[in-house]
Every structure is written in C-alpha cells, then in structure tokens.
Length: 379
Image 1 (cartoon, rainbow, N blue to C red):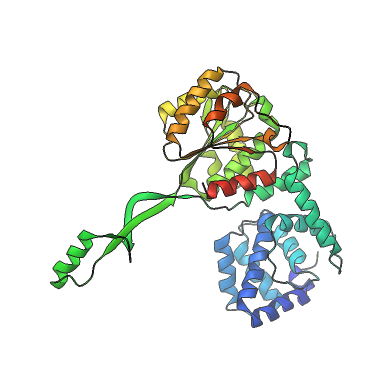
Image 2: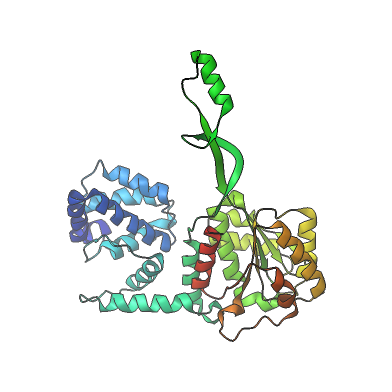
C-alpha cells in the first residue's frame, strides 16, 4: 500500500493554500477531517484536534507529508487507529480539494464507508447527492428492520451525538457585574480600602439538569434494546455526572457505571454482563416503586423507554407514575411504536402512564433519537 502522505500531494497542497488565505477555513477543514476519523472509530476528540492545529502552527501546511504526520501523531490513540487513519486521510484529501464545508456527521459516515470501498464521487456531484439521499432515508428507517451493516452505521452515528443538556439554577453563587447585591464581598472590600468604593454583585450558577433513563430490556423490546443502550451511552459520555441509567425488566438494574467506558462496544459488553433479566417480562410499576423508595428524581428529566407491555398491575404503574410526575421536572416516555401513524396507546401500561406524561415520543429511528436529544437539551 502506498504511503498516504506521498500519494495525495495535490489535496494537501490545496489545503495549505486555503490556510494561507484563511486560517479559519483551514481550521474548519481539519475539524471536518477529525469528524471523519471519529465516524471511522478513531478517538480524534476535540483535544486531539486542537493538538493537531497547534502542531501545524509550526509546520509547512503546504507539505502533505507534514500534514499527514502531524495528524497521525496527534489524532491516533493507538496502533489500532493507524490503518483507519490512513484510509480516512486518503478518502478525505485524496483526489479532491479539501474544501471547507459544513458536512453533517451522518453524511461523513456514509461518505467514509463508500470511499473506503473504492468508490469515487462524480465530478458533477451526482454521487454526493445520492449519498445524502441514502443517508436521509437511513435516518428515518426503523432500526428493527435494518441490516447488520446499516444498524452498525446508525450506532456509529449515535455515538457522535453531542447535544448539550438543559441547564438548571444551582444554589451556588458566582460573581457578576449585575444581579443581587453581594453584601459580604462589598463589606470585605470596604474594610480593606476604608470605604465603599464599589458594589459587588452575585448570581446563581447553573448546572446540567439531571436525566434519569429507564431502558426496557424485555422480550418485546429486544429489537430496540441495543440501540437504546447506545443512545444511553452517548448521554452518559456527554454528561457523566448528570445522567443515571437503569435497565428495567423483571428487576431494576443500575448500569451507569458500565456505560462510562469510552468505547461503545466495550460498554455494551459490560452492560450485557450486568443485566440478569434480558428478554424477560416487564414489571415497570414494581421497579418504579423500588427506584422511588431508594432514590429520588426530584428536579430531573425522567425518560422511560418502553413499549408499555406491562405484566404487572397497571394500577400500580399508574400510582408510581403519579409519584414520579410529582418529583421530576419533566416525564418523557419513548415508545418505538409511536413512530407509526396508526399507533394508539392501547396497552395497559401506556393507558396507565399516559395521564402523567409530559411527552410521548417515538424511539424507532436515528432521527427520533436526534429529536429526543434536542428535547433533553431544551427541557
């Protein structure tokens, strides 16, 4: 295999020309390259991307070899990343100008997969348009009906979800130019200077609003359980301290610690070992009662991912949902079947829970999980 640093001189040279005219444009190009690497499974996070940009400040960006080695030494976390890095570098810069574009993470993933198989985009952009169309179709398809390759691609896209989290006011304070008068700081300054020279102010700090996620792992939810757990992994990775995840089936199992692994596959492997009731029944009422007895959802956004097939007493579920609604800031129920136009909440569990829900949303596709992530960011 030819060295990628020497086989694509034109592309890297174009990137260097772009940097000389616009430093911001070159930074955007490198950021797009890092997104491509993350889509391929390389741990090219924001800190590593900044390190590459710092390295390029001291190198000649018109030299493709220097760009290649700067990225290889800063963006790769281990030997397993090297082959992926070479393929991504050739696909991203090879044969085309490294133009600054705002490419979505989904199209980057499909573009990388197709370029890795040896396909090349047409000069008139027809292939790029077709790629975007296929990705848009994949985003809206039911994950239970995807092939293994398509489901793996959806899972890679879920791992890249970086939506923020809604903020809530904390009891702590911080200094501010406006707001409430900070009497203590004002008095301390006056004692030091002998007079009140300046009024000090303060305001409440904010922190991410807590999310408590219950994932149904019963038999009826088996086609969606893995995708839901990968979505939970993305939530835990984005806000480790403000996210708690539990599996619900015939018992309540905390799985937050297992989901803190950086690698999604490793995290899912640990989760599979921790959950003792895969593909069993669902006794959500009893498990919510156990959670509310041992813990609290006060001020949190409670998310229940289930199809509502309750094997326990629906009346008990209704009672516990009422308790949960009184504590939580917001209660969101994620039902995979909600994504279909003819869906009606007729199961016993859904009918018992429905009066206490703030939102009943779909959970059957990548687009549905993206909307749920946005909802959590603005809850």
